[in-house]
Length: 443
Image (cartoon, rainbow, N blue to C red; front, top):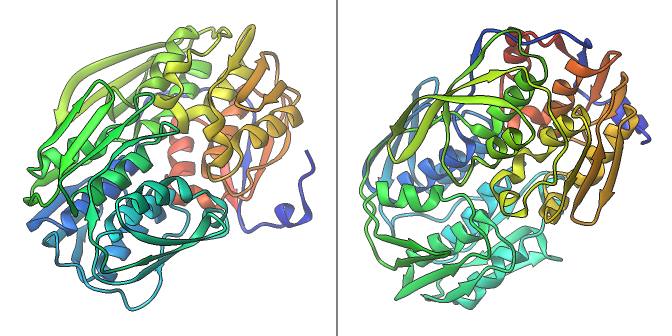
């Protein structure tokens, strides 16, 4: 992999000392998916919604600022606490300019569903990374409902024309995608009749759970999810669980290098998100769920991780959609495991913040790993990792994954272009240091 001159001189990089171990306990920030939805649904609810443990990352603040731009009063009285004065289903106002979603694909696709049924025009923009991501997969079903949407060669910016009545549809997703499912269901709140989404595989169900928390009737059974239009959302109180996608980095770190039991507290263990847990256990990881409980309608537990000898596996395809965001760090686990790991059915990774198949394969190879990318996954033969320099290509999960890789590397790592870690996990480097990973951010 060639690390470009631009990358080598990027604004932020991680310097990570090799080796070491992790110990003690950490509490990861609030779930990004739940935080996005809490502000969006709170904004169109009747009454005042209070949210605790809101993830104050750049991605989630993009959703918050978009709702403010459409006339929703949102206060942040304390760190992690958000108060949303809802304007009701029909109360949003035309924004004064473009709605900037930054790096947040979730914010953009969910907002497409929200804006499809409004009376006003709106234009969604994003940063350079988001502007390369596909939006037609969400625009297509929304157009079938009656929305008028213009993409830019299938990508952002996205313009939605207001004043078009929506009608419910029965839509079969071509690709298992919680973001597209959610966009259609949100638009369904504004549509005449019933809107049905059929999934080819189970995807995260935060939208369904949260709609129910706001008093909306949602039917879901056997891959079929349905909502009736015109239902009123009632304000509620929400506590956002810890993000399992953020916990994943520490789950792998603990499995590779824990000194005694390593605890990750207050992690959301929604069964549509625990693919990372299932895959690591199949690889031989000793991860125990302690103190299971509910935060609203979301299951939560503490995770106790023990150092384990990981082995390569063929990752079951039915688990892939349940761990799609966690594959970068799973690839690191595979590179440190004994034997061969094969991942198939994960083509979705190619249209994330970066092409995560290509970028992870290149980075692992640069560290001496045997990593062979395929069109829909990767084949990794476990072994030893060297030190060196890798480029994250501005992808937050790539940067954090290679930080974990340093625990098993024979030399120090320099990870370039890490500023976007703040989009999902503000304070990651500090928490990693607290756990025992010797990482410093330089500018």
